[in-house]
Length: 403
Image (cartoon, rainbow, N blue to C red; front, side, top):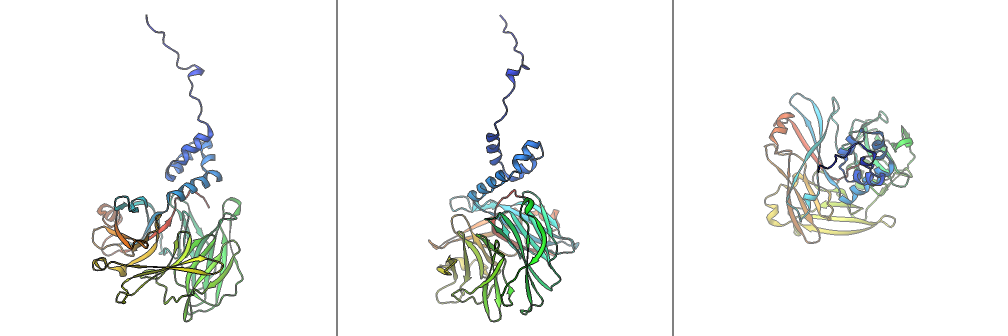
């Protein structure tokens, strides 16, 4: 006896809609690049993905996963075209319990036209990357593909731009320091609110401050609502502190000597487990050996600092050109990261080093997909005559926020 064929178009056979909570949970597990595509498939999906609640939830998960490595290549090809290349790589491969290699993926290319944007004079805050050129300020997000061009704040000869985030009012603000001349002339500070939604105010406003003339010397770093950057004043070096929420500037004189600021070759500011730290290379021929000193600001109000030291193994020194490396920050396990400043001229990989201050260990991780990728270099005209300055940061997090 044949079984009667069931009708498949009856209401009882229709699939039940996915509950909203389950839909949000599914979205939250997707990569940001996929979310940016799915948001345009329906108005309902758009409302979920672009809601502040979902954006904050996505970023919380990003924080829990840990930061990603951001690799920036500032290139001028043989035709004189100027471009910025942005790569990112998962930091999981940089864990001591994982294989010792990372693969970088190309996320975005920005043609810079006549303006050769410099990176990273400003800061990396969450998923926002800042570039600048003669007062022009550009902020981009690799996930959302949003590029925000900030108008000039004035006609001063020297300008330095930084980005900060106020976690209390949930606002992003740009800081511009302007100097009339390079030898500590007249200076001014202006602030511009970027915010989210109705908080936007793309006009500069001057803030009052009583700081003596100084010249910035390092990139900016934003920690707990304060932007820090190294600066020089006459015969000493200081740390500039900009409170993003209160819009106040002050100068910090550390209780230790900073001989010079030099991001490319030794002395730099880093975020050490959510605290400001100054890292400084010790001399190669010093009696105590070659290494670095890490000073950590343990108490912001009392200006209390702790100190850690690290000494490089002698065998490692013989095989590494340390002068071409810089300290870029730490990974999730607290290892100090050293990265190269210039890509190799020949078709070969380059390496990142991880230093464990506690165990005094060091390990090498190979970064693949850039300097060793012949097809990439040929396609974008990157050859021996091109400028291939690189910059690597460990402060980048995936973020789907729109400014």
